[in-house]
Image 1 (cartoon, one colour):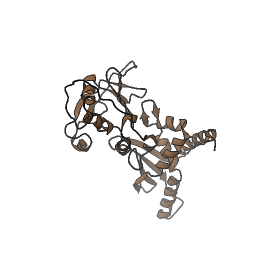
Image 2 (cartoon, helix red, strand yellow):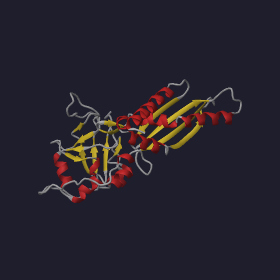
Image 3 (cartoon, rainbow, N blue to C red):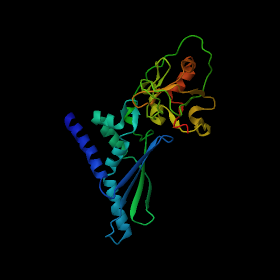
Image 4 (cartoon, rainbow, N blue to C red):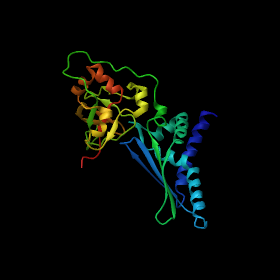
Length: 284
């Protein structure tokens, strides 16, 4: 199959998914949970009222849902930000090979719930797609060898930290944009200092840690208790100074904080291991 044919096939898949989504009675509702780094998709279909057997009607509805599951999941994941300038749709449109890998990984979506509506008129299912882990859809983006993060030489008052906690709630100045914006979560956010020097990106992270849990965890409130396993008991706490990127996924932190992180090899290691938590969302 030629590259052009692969491109055409992918766009036919996307077009078909949108066409099927418009079928009367068939509903799908995707929702990203960044606290668990996963996508859940609720798909429902009406039971055929002409079938007198409830188990048979339920089985037919489930079979119909499973028949179009790949297309529904591909459509659901499309708007999720992979990184600042690309969503899953952007990536899959540009690279049919990655589109095929993601489609294959979506086969591992977990069926979390299956039940009938209160009036027994619809079958409702909920599938969960993990971003990271053994069947995470981020796997096609994992590199084999990390780029070196260079230690900054010279004396900087610092100590060994166990992680990095970035507070980025509310609208922040957006570099290159006329007004402030909320931070948009992404699979692979970048970190810059105030001089717009790149501090951390996907390629600087350890591949095994990146595949396990990504570059950073996202939470919506300052509750560090459940996050000890990620950032430990003594993280460096910083406030984001601004956001950056087409989709405002990248974080700018103070240059002083960056110097504290890059002056010790132990602190550089925590960046490479993805021991980062970002507090995001509206500040209301």
